[in-house]
Image 1 (cartoon, helix red, strand yellow):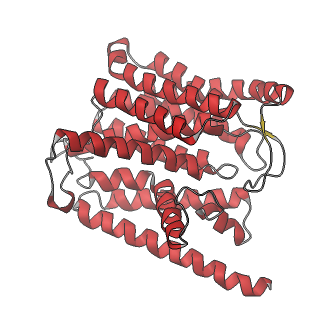
Image 2 (cartoon, one colour; image 1 turned 30 degrees about the horizontal axis):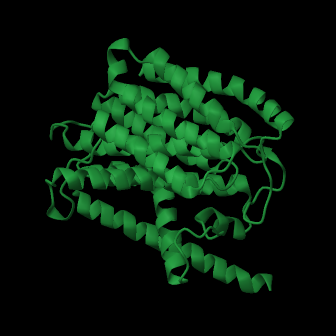
Image 3 (cartoon, helix red, strand yellow; image 1 turned 45 degrees about the vertical axis):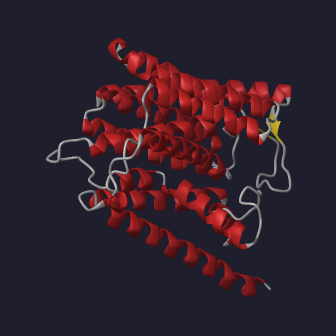
Length: 351
């Protein structure tokens, strides 16, 4: 664990030292996020924090990964570099959504074709195991795109994305370490350190945002970690003390907040006969703030909820995936309904 902690500390220091420079340069060059109709923040804020996160992550990874393992992770870094440059371009000069999606697809293809990052079966979900190779590629591509963009969507208020990312990556990092996967443990902890450093400047009131640069890189890293986690856990020996029999549920629970929020808003928009991709303020964090909570309080509430899901799946890791996943879905539904009712009860009081 010493190497993983060293990776986290190294990325933290690098990111922490770079961010003030980016803030100053961004303000001088007007590389900022301007408040608007769909945005919660009220002041002009630099939006290139993802650059510092990425630099801290990459340098720490290269320093603390043994040379013998560089071959294993080079294609991961290539894919992350691709989405990094897509994010930088979008933060500087907005890209069309199709072009952003195309870039993510190309990065996903690199991971699947060169690193063999794949969901190689259904892992017992609904009693299904083996799947054709073509189906494996399609499911993997869909999973990468969904997770990457669900994290991007959750980046809506000060401290929230960093809090969720830190909890998820720490959960993945510890599980990889306990499973004996040192390379992915270093990757996860290196990203955790950079994210924590970023949070010092992103907590309410925020001095800088991670922008699409950070959201896409972290989202892609979470997608990679989730897919690798599922396949790794499924193939561990049955007697391994830290094996997740509910491997799919484990990965889902680590990133439950972004996934649940994305599913929720898509369902709501379809019910309203709107396009699922129409931007609005129906995200979970928007609703929590309608109850009177601040940015920081909302981030903490969702962060603690994310921790709750992690704890639940750790305690139920030896159960069948179908039951655990169904339980997680039921709990998400109950929490969503409770939140909606709380808002409905608050509206008459305000009138």
